[in-house]
Length: 279
Image (tube, rainbow, N blue to C red):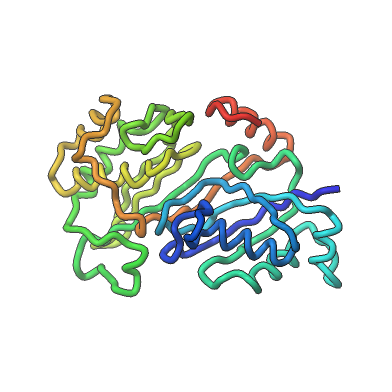
């Protein structure tokens, strides 16, 4: 009998070459699967909610994997097998590097899929656009720029909301759809010299958030008109003026799921069908 485990992860992306395992490179997946194999004594593949780029951080990444019930009971030891999965979280954190942590663990139903069951993902991009707010202690998590007009950026974001083909703001993967539903793209002043951009969608294409931020920043800096990002979206291609915002300002904050197992399974089937993915 197998048990499906959901784990919520946080990591500082500065020292990783992204999520996905790559030969000879330090990645989040590589470090996590190595730690899990050390405890389980066999390779255990994991499924992630969203693959983050090199240098991107996470406070709410979600993964799932399957273990035999006997393996899970052995890990629990005297603590006993508990639905919250806390013994597994403690054992993993003891062998994981300090820039990668398990925040929570739980046994879930077989209908749960960290990638396809997700209702939405939410990212935050941090910008410091005044010298007095360019804190050297936070430089690894904030993009330092020239002063930006946040009101113009907020207005430019509005036409991008809804379901669109986001090819102009993506690096398409072969065989993957670039149609996404952007639910929120909020530009907020977090202080006199701080701007936070919150992006929420059913899913994101490769580099999508960083290209969106780059386009909005061009408007905020006065290099482009407010209508320009919407015109780029409608054109179907990305001009060279759309720059990729630096990775280190971006953090995956949260991934949301349906509450019960049957709804999670239904959502996974719908998402696979929409994106043309096999079960």
